[in-house]
Length: 259
Image (cartoon, rainbow, N blue to C red; front, side, top):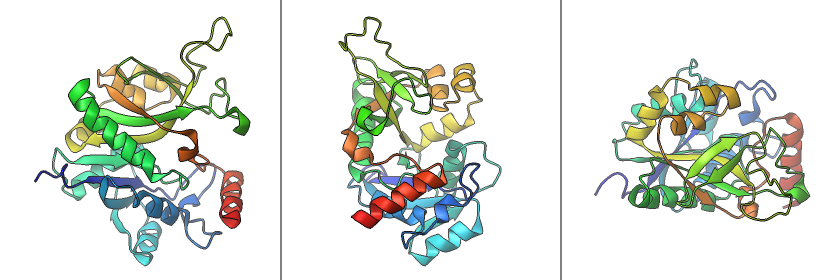
């Protein structure tokens, strides 16, 4: 049985350093460190057989050990999460055909069904459209203040094959006539699925012009001709989004108290 058939491996990059919220992955006002919330929810995905935390700080490694998580130390010098993921996959000696899921370490509300949908999108996309990577997207939620013209919300447009045409911080697609017809805006969900061999190839690619312009690492894949299959998931499955600031963490703590 191949490694892929045994289930995917999720790797959660968890840096302790953060410009806007230092130490956020160990913030524990809920009674658990943030990274544990992510690890627990990730582990409920049916498509996974293994969940690993990848960190560059001994304190995160010790925290992971305290709640029984598998963790691996990686270099502090990585330029991005994909590079850290590739080092972790190498240390874990995952085979080239293994499916690797990059789960953000600051999205504790992400429903595990989103992971399953993205893994499924990769497997189907490999057969139908030659996709090498998969991710997820969802409809914007105006009631929660999500707007297409917000540069902090990354949008994605899809082709008829369900693969990404482009990701942007700009409002895409642009509704020229303002009639609300045609393709609706989709918010990108920062989750990626690859085969280990593709992950290594992707991580070794130098930065590309569109990537540097938009500050979106996934554009590097598109600029190099890699197709990205996109699973469109219900907005409620994506939770409250990533936690980048103390205020967002406080909102998360409040949500946990009301559950």
